[in-house]
Image 1 (cartoon, rainbow, N blue to C red):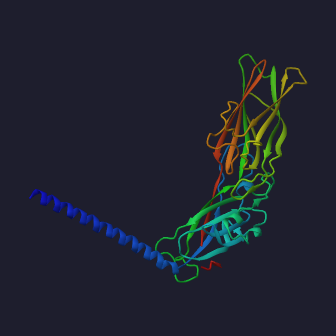
Image 2 (image 1 turned 120 degrees about the vertical axis):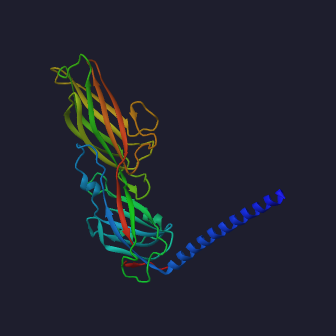
Image 3 (image 1 turned 30 degrees about the vertical axis):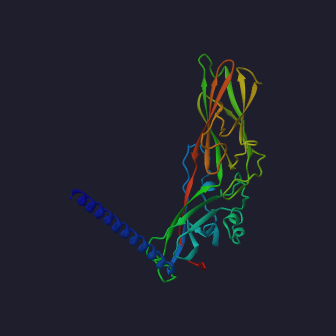
Length: 355
């Protein structure tokens, strides 16, 4: 009798589980059916761009316009790696793209790519694939031109979204937010921290920074990937900067597209003069450091996860200098930060995407 009861209970539990699975299957099928019904619905995507710069030290050069300005944009409606439609605009007011909208059927698998501040937006209009959008960026990052940015975001329609009308309405307007990152990296010598050792006073031995230069700056890139182009460029500045005890703000800044080539990495060279009291001709010292070196060198400490110079990062360099009677010792530290993320918001009318 007990065995029969146990078997009865087991049968009941199996039946309940089976019913629950059937209910879940029915619910999933219902959701799919609703999505399929929506395949005949229309959706409008309109576009907004917003930019927010990463705030660093107050001594950073006033490059806000160059780094954050949105002068033009290429917008591509994608299905996987296929381009469904491309539009360009330079009519941007407070981040709002005034003259571009996409009209599309409500469906899954769509995304929008934004490419901002390229030299010739019209060059992208004939692109039919993601690879074709990955063009060489010819904007020199160290010119006065605004920096190039790129990003992509999936278009996720809620169940029941859209309408039968192709007119832009609240019912069928879908906002999509795209985070776009800088294609270039920013490298900045931010400060010298100088300590005069016990028994050494500044008037006995003074140090003057005379030049800062960065070698192997990459002046070209592809939109989405690193390009092995133009890596033999030197950027920097000459100066006469007497280094007092304490923190000396420098702020020398350069921009480079990604350069992860171990054979020709980005390097920083510092030249400074050491004068003894009463000496008109002091000793000139030159020291070179690799930016974000990956091998754990004690002379230059970079980020273990980001070797060399990568797109979208800020490399802030601090030099700690100790001056004593007989020598000047330097220790260089690089702080790697996620430099900047802008937001591009895309609502999806003007261009009809044929299915």
